[in-house]
Image 1 (cartoon, rainbow, N blue to C red):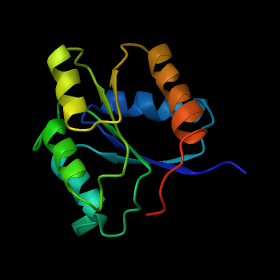
Image 2: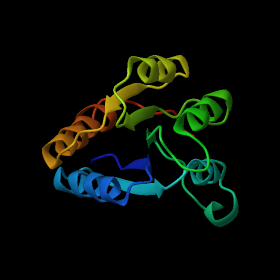
Image 3: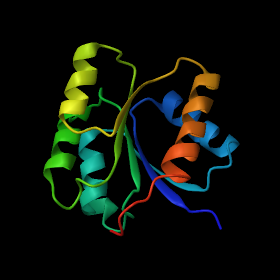
Image 4: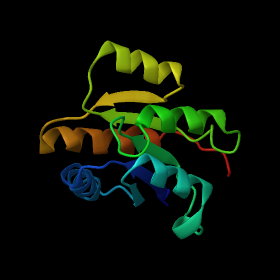
Length: 143
């Protein structure tokens, strides 16, 4: 029996949201995809506040760095500083390939850093990598 994985995609670009959603579906990954479109919303989802009071805890966060209302760096720092959230793996998935952003993300305890691809095939590779590694191999703690 396959494991259901809850992914929280933190992304403000509708095009990138749809590309990610389509590629995840095409690789047959058994998943539930939650989407947060800004840095405040992701924290509301993770803390189950307001409209997100019933939100499930994600197994994996895919985090863009360039977000409205609160940057991805701020979100990552908050997640990793919070004892109730710090064990959730956070993969930075962003358009930046600068060494400064890579180093800063790992300093903030990102689980991985992936530069966002520019085409559908590249998004497919990421979806397959999520399925092959984060779903098939990784074990998550029970809440």
